[in-house]
Length: 628
Image (cartoon, rainbow, N blue to C red; front, side, top):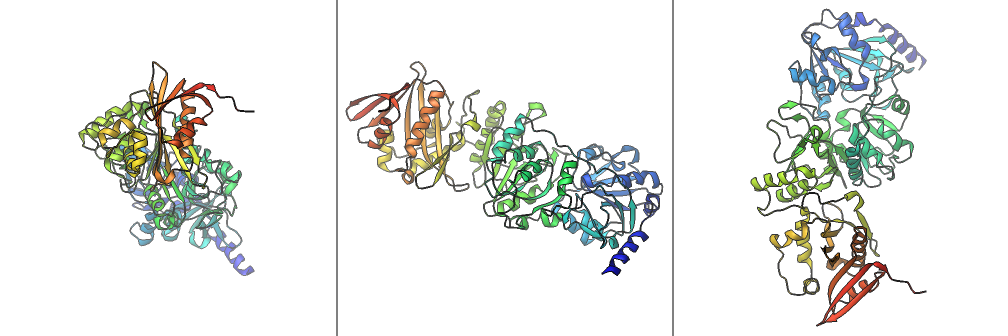
């Protein structure tokens, strides 16, 4: 084995050269691949200008730039023309000017373009670690499409940087594949993600509630993904399978939240294609076998993503229309970013057992002047994720579930999580497009819902659970289905008469609430997409008397499981918090279950029986003394 080590050392030394000599091999008209993101070989890129006088009319193929480079600088636009697979901030202006190109393509397909020769490469400029005794260098923080570039480029120039972290997985390339080696030590580029603001924090909270214990997550970069990660600290045994990640992952990893024990693909391993972070992150991944860096045709392949049970893919968007079409790469006709891995991961998560495909975005843009939820996408806007692929949409105002829902249901669900300032206009546009009923209404402006404080979970004696929250206009169909599941006796007790139908006009006032004078909560059993409304409790407040009339309905499958008692007492608690003094109810004499619940409510009550109907008043300011 020693002779192999010596041979590799000799080969390495024979390929050491200067940047000037290596760059001299690049001719006019060449297609040059440059390493991605934080793995950008800064010294080599600078050498393109210093020593590349012969380089002209060259195409630079690049995934994403974090820093200004010669190929995004107007001074060098005649020498270098960028072709970006994803438009980062550094390249955005060059693309807007028409001095750079954008290739819309799934990241999972880029290595295939290179290997097939469709995207033939003359030169690759990459950054690597010093070799081990066997001549293997690591590509460090970025493997994604760079591994394919090293394997297929006609001439590979590598900057050997001892500060680059050595990463495990499919990140290794032999010195045999590197034609020119330039030793140059410099700090690895760092990326400092923005701190989440109040809006991102709320989005992060909602999105995190969709991630169960044991899930595998796609954790991207930016303020919203970081906010999501921050709110996952109460989870257990999470895994990671993601195209990229940043520092937001560190705290979860160090706290033991990320273990990968429940992963069904590469258990125990954090699988990624590249990372963008700081020195703290680089020190964590250096020689750390828990992290595996692989190419995007592996990481972002939807078929492989789907092998992760309970895959939660969280992606962002620029805007989404009322039918669920997601635009993530352009603002109208102006290209802004790229496909990235969104379509791959949304599709992969949708195919995964227990998968959760999530689109998370702020409700507004341009400092609150424009809604990101729109009637129709802007002219020229691209659809990155189709309406058929969208499942969950999250804003700072809550969660909308769209998959398998009608256009009417989708529109109402999205309007419900739009910024309140734009809900009325969105509803009018939806009516004009015939997406919703002509008489559809919304809660009055200013009706206060603090949803993060109004989510509850009920645990039944048999171990089943139900998610409880206030009703919204988007719940109309669920309420109708609950009504039609009731027995004749249930309906008689609830409505004190025979009611055969609950049409749109009749159900509308039951779901359009102001949450003060008209308030209702529902209980949903099961998981999306099979979640069903199984119980409702509501009140109608007489403001003058400060007295609210309440009613509780529980579906047949959940009767006898104390759900009615739970919803009843929850309604009393919320009413007290809102300053309601009294609750009233009209209960048929034969409805013994309801009367038993009222009798044990813990407040002083007054009951009067007339013609077989109990009239009950509950005094919320008078707690009943418990017997000694």
